[in-house]
Image (cartoon, rainbow, N blue to C red):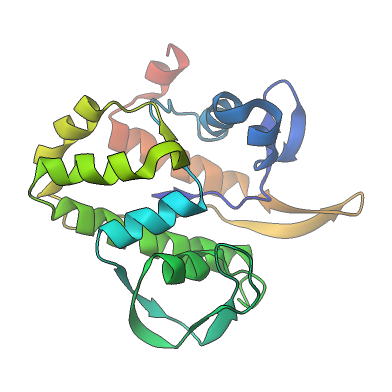
Length: 219
């Protein structure tokens, strides 16, 4: 799993240097995917795009998610009600709304967006492992059916079912971090990625995907 900080300064195809989170605003999923492909020099074949409600529903459908809250804090809920949810330091099993607050909080984290990214990775890992424990294929169908318009993907249900036999082999999930530094350019904040870090992550991903350098250049 790779988390890309939303303020990362990258080259957006057809737009030039900008924050990576602007790619979706400029060109939707297609441009967001293309931007990630160019940044990491790998093909991105599939995507899943979900809003806050879908995230809440997925966590609840899986019976909550267990995380280790690093410190006590309060955060708004999915309706943006200020300090509606308080999470306490220590190991907690969170419901959907609580998990959303956990992955949204940024300003109270001394690491800012990097700390938020780490919490998001923690939750995604926990959800993947919990989903992998589902033995009934119909349970996946029930979860997806309930998400309705809150989720979009180019994976078919048949694609998801085809992955199910591999679920039981998930014992660990590696996290890769893109390193960089904070910078203000023309008065605007950016997270400037370290080129060596980007190249290292790209290389590791290519190894995982079984790609050689020339493979993707021909892709």
